Length: 328
Length: 311
Image 1 (cartoon, rainbow over the protein chains, first blue to last red):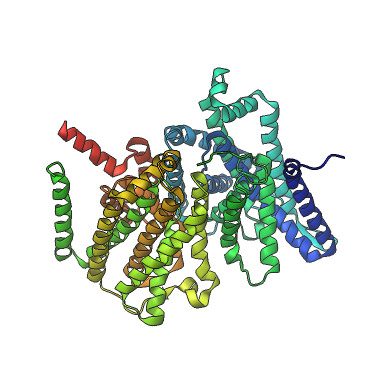
Image 2: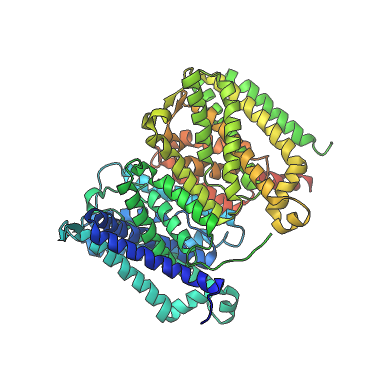
């Protein structure tokens, strides 16, 4: 019998932890209807955090930059979808048209404003994305008159509700999870099975070697931004449950912080980690607010901040990240 | 000495203009000029952190909130003299900055940006939770509401004092250590600079400056501390102001402060994009343009002009 070495332990720690968490959620959901309700809601919301987190991870992997405008970009594309629907497109026509627009927008932004500063410094790049944040915010407010009048997207999956043994599951949640999973599968397939995906991975991981092998690294980075914007658009469109889907310019702001936490929990480098992190944050927050009456929804953000800080301090590489060694 | 003559001359001119200004402009414009002073202090503080030690913060509005609420609560509960509350806000935020700076030691680059961004969004939520002590969404009033002229004099006196203090800190041993940390952490350590101490200290100092700015901000808002005035947009505005001013130099701060302090007024009168939103479009476009075209900001532009003149 071989003894477990610490290295083995740390390798199985994450899967073991996840398995334990999943088992706990399942057992508790079977025992308590209330718990199951919160968990279902947490999963649905967590999917949104995860897909925006994945958008952040895609960009971080390729350029080691966090796009602070990712949330506002998602808001902008959601407003565009609303506008398209106003102009007479059906929800799903508008949905796919918006994804295409988001892709183009992301690509253009990367080429126009990110590429020139990308190699200068982290601070310069962050400031540019902050500038984008404010700029997009202003454009939304200007074009859609402050977004103050009532605007709502139609409910794409109806407003029906399933009753599964006392647990109420809105159709919307199922549709939302389905759409996000489908978009994830598409992105995963792209990276895993296509030449383009291979080139993008190469450009992100080893830019110098990739360019020697004939990959247009700058084109790949631009496409990466386009994909991230596309995923953000999916997150934005799916973010608001039909009960209160009033579009307003800042609706992605808390979601952006949750997805930061999701991405950090997953290690900022790991796409799967971002999804798992998103689910974790979503479930954690709904359970927290659901079961601890002293904590109102006002405290969701401060709590996420503490969780984020905790993750960054205790395990900066997250659950799935590689450890980057740089000692000073 | 001779080489520094133009610098001293321009400082003297700015000082004289600031002294004369309140006598020749309307009361409302005095108020606007006072607001510029508030942003001057805040951007100065942020620049010490981001410009001189290379630690980015997208969350210094949070420290302004702490300073502003310190002033408002002290005035509400103890009717404390407002000048004294500024000093206390300085001290409170210095400690708050050190406390945040300690965990932030282990973060750098984008990680620090993430943490500070989350901080900026979190702090304004707290008054909504503890509505009794922190005033809820209605905010807190100070007992005395100073006149615009009083705020102007206070804000610019504070700006002057804090500018001199910053200059003294940055020109000496501490400033050299700050820049060493920014330029190369490894080289700094090798030369015996305790990185942790200086990074934390920079956080404390810059937070203290923003605390004073927050106190002044509350006074300039009719003595009204309100949580949504300290939203994440305020933090972003500070970073934009610092970038426009030029990171790592004290010469552009007046321009950065004037830009973020006055732009909302100007863009409100511009047709089409006017209203309240126009300013965000201009903020965003301009800061991106600055980063692309003149990365050194206004200070960088000045330096370039100076070398042109000398050549």
